[in-house]
Amino acid sequence: MGEITGLKADLVQIVRLALAEQTEDVRLFAARLVRKYRGTEPELAEQVDLYLRSKPQRAGAPLRKAIAPSQQNEVLPVDDESRLSLLKVFKDPSDREAPLLSADLEESLGQLILERKQASRLASLGLTPTRSAIFVGQPGVGKTLTARWLAAQLGVPLYVLDLTAVMSSLLGRSGSNLRTALDFAKRSPCVLLLDEIDAIAKRRSDDADVGELKRLVTVILQEVDEWPATGLLLAATNHPELIDPALWRRFDLVVDFKLPEPTSIKEAIKRFLGPDFALFGRWMEILVFAFQGHSFSDIEREIQRFRRALALGTASDENLIEEFIKARALSLERQGRIDMAVLLAKQTRLSQHSISEITGVSRDTIRKYTTDGKSAVSQKRRREA
Ligand SMILES: Nc1ncnc2c1ncn2[C@@H]1O[C@H](COP(=O)(O)OP(=O)(O)O)[C@@H](O)[C@H]1O
Ligand SMILES: [Mg+2]
Image 1 (cartoon, rainbow, N blue to C red):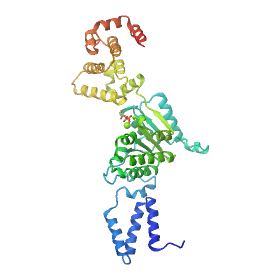
Image 2 (image 1 turned 180 degrees about the vertical axis):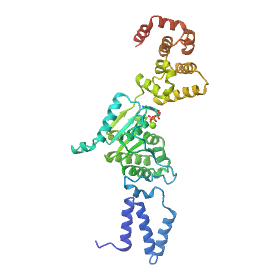
Image 3 (image 1 turned 120 degrees about the vertical axis):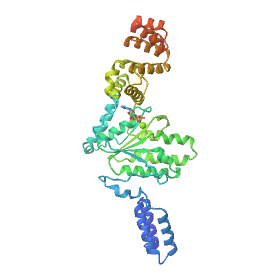
Image 4 (image 1 turned 90 degrees about the vertical axis):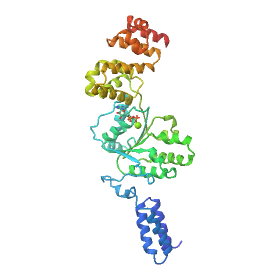
């Protein structure tokens, strides 16, 4: 094969640059071609020039500059069509308050942080730290919050990839948008969170464009495998059952976020009440009971509501609690309502009449359960079990 010269060599060069996704270099090179061929190949030059003009330099283009990790003003990738920023950035101080975590979660996340801090020690033994983890759990249990905290602990920014933004872009482009975002995140030490990763899976079942969504999953599969140990790749989902098993297997670590246990509920109430704890403290056991089966964000929302009403003087703490318990009782089974009535009888000075009204449990039943105390409740439970 003879040496390729002239136009052919230029063609080869531009293919090379394009495949390396060096978009800026492609531009510069194309501009050079326009000048070079204006005399000999005017039509070719004009056509290339036209393309250059019709596709002005975009915000995401000078990414090449961002290769230096220390560079501060990195340009975040943006979807060309919608101009939505594909990545959200969080840079939190390392003393950011830790999320409330169960003991086993605290342990596995502690280990993850330790591995990062001792990365060179691991490396000397031929080991790499955990590179990827998937957070599973119902909404409002702290998956996103924990990702933020982890990044802050590691002293790196958190990038959150908004998969809805990726997919709201023209479907045909979402694969390349995803790659742009992932490539960006791979270039510097950071934590990247693919939040609500099931969004892709969900779309797969009700969208005509199955092929494109499959491609997205493939891109993610590859990335999880090849993620550099300098970064940490996280994914979060409320719907583990929708996640492709092939994807699932690729994560180094699965972190299961459960609904809070009574001890965590108590801590959460305390934290969210802040200075109003003094006032609400006496309702603690009742609140802990009422919040069972609810997420941290439910608890936070409710407590914030109490605090606002109190601050504006629109209700007393007693009113607020009564209203709240009443609403909660509606969703409880009979035994739950009885347990709540017993608790109210023991913990408050409410009359049996009010307790009956709040919980919908008859006064007779309340009397029956409270006179023989706790044992009646547990006996009944045992019988039912
Ligand atoms: N484990 C937690 N500890 C403290 N606050 C929490 C926790 N989980 C949730 N919250 C509160 O609820 C909000 C929503 O939580 P988030 O992390 O977005 O939930 P998820 O991502 O699991 O749906 C948080 O901003 C925080 O105020
Ligand atoms: Mg979330």
